[in-house]
Image 1 (tube, each protein chain N blue to C red):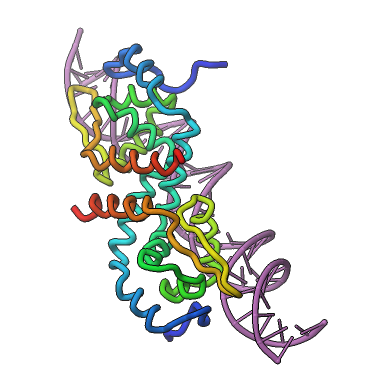
Image 2 (image 1 turned 90 degrees about the vertical axis):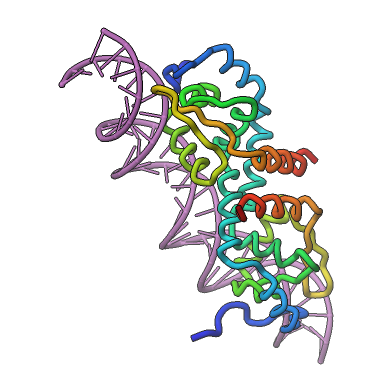
Length: 117
Length: 117
DNA sequence: GTATCATATGAACAAATCTTCATATGAAAG
DNA sequence: CTTTCATATGAAGATTTGTTCATATGATAC
């Protein structure tokens, strides 16, 4: 069981096709990359990241800024956390979240460039 | 009907919250930004973009490189097209797709930096 | 210990998403 | 005009995703 998919093609140089196949990064890398973008791909999470641009915030405050439930925000923070986009520290009852590094800022800035054209 | 959501909060300076709310970009911008990232947030589409890194390709060849259906690839190309990430030109029966601009490369490069840590 | 505040998490449901299959469109050749 | 090749698209179905609600955990104050 091997042959499937694409029945042939247009110009269809088999050599070109093979060359490109070999040049593609590993599936795992591509999947991780897509997953990273997927995390940015939700308005709520983008808003959370934006809210954290200037300073750290606790969960409740984030929820207030966005006008969303604490639960919803917490769920999203978990995703952002596991993608290493935000970090956190505990202080008493509260948990303060902040951007994990500057990649987040660069990423959003770059995205904005494309959107604002 | 106004009061909803977040029952109050941790530190919860109402002024800080209001300040941040005013500083957030328009909802429309944030939505567009999320939508852009969402387009990058799928392995198939990432693969397509990667395949187009070096040269333009017709739909059938892309499908072969990825080992996917022509239909599937075509559906995804439509998304990439409407997000202005790829452009195309027709030549006889074939349609050649290519990256629309360098934002795509920068975006993927930046994403890779974060993933490969 | 109990009460309270802040956050996290599990289950459930609705909405969005991706692939497949079948078929339509569009262009060139006969 | 009919056939063939390349691509596009609509509908259907399975999977994924985001929010809500209820409840659990964790930390402080009493």
